[in-house]
Structure formats: structure tokens, C-alpha cells
Length: 221
Length: 231
Image 1 (tube, each protein chain N blue to C red):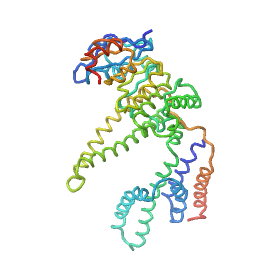
Image 2 (cartoon, rainbow over the protein chains, first blue to last red):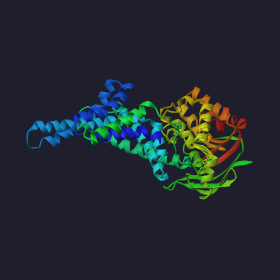
Image 3 (cartoon, one colour):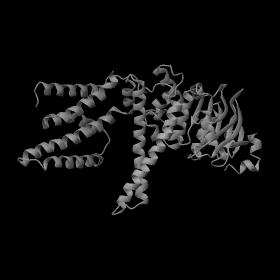
Image 4 (tube, rainbow over the protein chains, first blue to last red):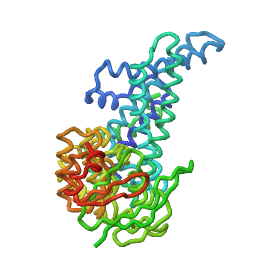
């Protein structure tokens, strides 16, 4: 069950970030992922680019809840800022945690699910999602090269993007279905070797548990 | 011994076009048969029938097993299929996991499967990529990775759809050395003269949904009709 440690730690931290009643708990919940992030190779620029859309989304979303509200704007503004931070925090915990967990870890977690149909479904879902992201990148490149992406061209880009995405996705699924029929004789499992507990895994897991405990016992608010 | 026997195979597409019009073909054990023909002549359609992905009228026997709805799973364990769009062949998120997925026997333990999968990856020069996504590999590496997955399943008959498609000279030579060293019966569709010359023992010429001729490769390479179909 050691293979579940990292995903469990990520899940716990994500829940903590989402449910954090104070900025202190929110910040404390993000510490392990900040460490993972710092140890990774992602540049600050890439980190900013990745976070920009989600920050914009959460700002717009949260602004909508503030504008029609009554009472002093400052208190509403404080809540709104927390919501923005929580959305961005959960996104970063899940994204960075996903990298930390790794591809083989994902397969390992799926391999522990006792229902075979669900296991096959999740493996295929992962395969389809990975192709979806790759297809998306290819389509964006292809459209950027061949269509104007300024002014009225943007509408055409949107139209061709979805049209291409749908047709490529259908083709992907047809091929993937054929591959699955030919290759899935057994039960998909993990290629990961039996894991040994590593310091960072145990530290992250117990850190998340400790935060929960401190919060539940009222040590941190 | 005959590893693949096809008799009177017919198949119509849903729009009514005839794709296969009475195909008769026999591939002996150990033979490497190149299936050549113009685009749309029915090569891929024929290969898809051998693994039961298409269901036409006629008789197919793979490694002594007659094709039926009950036997199709056994046939798929005997016959490995390399897709022309090889990137769709991969299912698992990491290369080692994907090769393990096809490992035979199905009942073997994860440790046994891991050892076997690693052996095939090593044999195909892909060991260092074991924890990467198969989709991150180059075209040539992807073909070899997919073949490793097929071979880990102990396939006796290899069906290869355009195996050299998208490969440069170096990639083609590497794949070819792997293919010819496997010692398996093969049926592969191709337009590449290089592949026919270096790998095939026999050539089957397909036209308008039928096998027109099956000849030894030396004879085929002297035939203007064959040379017109490969480059």
C-alpha cells in the first residue's frame, strides 16, 4: 500500500487547501508542494504562464460573487482573495502533485483498484486524455501557422479548433479501441516495482496528517 | 506447416464498395511475406481480418486455429499486429508498463512480466526509456517499442502494416535488423522496395481486393509489374 502514500498526501493537501479557513493553514498546506516545485525543473516563467489562466479565471469567477454583495467591500474582498488563492492553490497542488506522483505511480494506484472494469476504464481514460492534450497542441500549432490569429481570424480559429479536435479525437478513439481489443488480454497493472518508503513521501504524508490534526484540535485556526 | 491460411475471403464496406473479393493466401511458418499493392487495394483490410477486427465472409486459420467468435481471443494471442499509426498502439502511461501489458502468459506474476518486458526492451535498445511515455519516443523508437510489446506476448505471426512508414534510413535499418532477427512468420504491407529486398522471402501482389500472385522475392524483384508497385 506504500504506492498510495504520495497520491494520498496530494489528496489530503488538496482538500486542506480547499477547506482552509485561514491564510495560515492555506500557506502551511502549500509548503510541501512548494518544496516539490522548487526541486523540479520548471522555470518561474513557465510556472507563471501555467498559473495565469487559472488566476484570471478565479479572479473573474470570484469578482462575480463580490459585485452584487452587500456590506463593506473590504470584508467581501478578503473572502474573495482567499477564494482566488484557494482555487490557484488546489490547481497547483494537483498539478505539481501529479508530477511528483508520476506516470508509473498513477498506473500503480489504478492497479490497486479491485474492480477490473474500472481499472481498464481508468487506464483508457488516461490514454485518451494524454492524446487529447497532444492533439490539442498539434491543432493549435497547425492553426497558428495557417490562419490569422488576430481580429476576425480568432472566430475562425475557434471554429476550426473545435472541428479539428472533434475529428481527431474520434479518429484517436477508433484506433485506441482497436489497440485495446487486440492488446488487453490480461489485467492492466503497474510496471512500478514494489516501492520502498522514502523520506520525502513519509514526511509529506505525516505533514498533511499533522495539519489536519492541528486544525481539528483547534491548534491552528 | 502453414501459419496463416485464408480462403475465399470477401468483405464489403458499409457503403457497398467491395474491399476484398475472394482472397486466397497461405503463409508458411518462418516465411516473411510482403503484401504489396496500390493504395486502396485492400492490404490493411486484409490484415485487419486476420486478427478479427473486421469480419468478412470466408475462411481464416491462424497457427492452426480456425477463426470464429469463440476462437478470436486465442488468435489475437498468436498474432501480433503493428499499426501503421503506431502511436495509437500504446495504452499504458509508461513504456515498461505498456510492454508488460502484452506479456504472456497472462497468468504470470508482475515480477515475471517485468523481467520479460525489460529483456525485450533491452533487445530492442529501448531499456533507457522504460519509465518514459511511449508517445515521447521518436517514430523509429515507437515502432520498436510497439514490436517489443508484441514480442513480449510471444506472438507467432506478426502482421505489420507499413512498418517502415515515417522512418528515415537509419531508423529503417535498425527496425529491419530487429525484424529479421526475430525468426517469426510475418505478413507485412509495404510500398518500400528496401523492405521487400532486405526482409521478404515472398511477395504477394494485391489488386482490386484480390491476391493476384504470390512469388519468391528474387523472382518478384525481376517482375516489372512488382517493381511498378514499390519504390
